[in-house]
Length: 319
Ligand SMILES: Cc1cc2nc3c(=O)[nH]c(=O)nc-3n(C[C@H](O)[C@H](O)[C@H](O)COP(=O)(O)OP(=O)(O)OC[C@H]3O[C@@H](n4cnc5c(N)ncnc54)[C@H](O)[C@@H]3O)c2cc1C
Image (cartoon, rainbow, N blue to C red; front, side):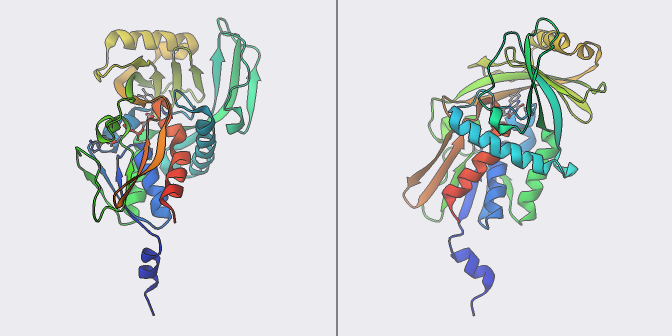
């Protein structure tokens, strides 16, 4: 009688290397592990050093394309993050908040992704219109650690390794390329560009709702112990040093939106480079004996798209 474990491993279960330990790579690794694949993660930057660790991280489909796929991935991720929010170890919380607009707006294209969207008709000047809804807010330092625990809980590894090329050749069955901006090098993809984003962390002053003005972008995202205040989106900028003049402008815009921010003590500053692309690349490439699933270019929405994309990556790898 063959051993049951051995039988499972020889029936379609793949040996997978995930390149990248941001939210995209780790979510893909977890899904693939849940399907029974043998998955290890390699990355130049460990989870808390990635762009993902800088994300605000409010569920909101921002600067990611194409809209139809983004909508489906966002909806799937919303459902999964809502499910994870019932376990406080994940760092995911469902919070109500308001997106504000200075002009009258049509229903957002992603409105079907959230269970209940309410138009806010009485907005303080200069805002004329707004949408109120409940969305997942993810404390990335907790959440990325939780994802790593899921990987390690399956007995698999996360290793720091800077690659010059994606692994391929004999013995490398499947590679998931979740290298974010690193795919400029690893996939020779010149269509990826950085969109620099800066945030300021301030003391938690009793805020429980998030606020977003996409036009800035200006956002105020409360977490358990602090508030993330953003933001900026500077196309093509690579400089990861926080800039004090930008920080002042961010705080000034955010204080107009939420006056309590003006009185909150500043705790720190961070910058991340969003991996922007005309469209997210999620597709299978065959290179000799190796199947490569590319999954990068999530722009300003890597957290928002993470589980929807991980599901699709898992489907491409197969069961
Ligand atoms: C200020 C700011 C606010 C944001 N807010 C939100 C938000 O509210 N909601 C939201 O959904 N998204 C938000 N984002 C966007 C989100 O952070 C990104 O879309 C997401 O982090 C992309 O994840 P990723 O895993 O693809 O890339 P990353 O987190 O950049 O991870 C890439 C991984 O690949 C590895 N890698 C790269 N090159 C190599 C190599 N040569 N060898 C080995 N490993 C390599 C890296 O080391 C890293 O581990 C925000 C971003 C910023 C900057």
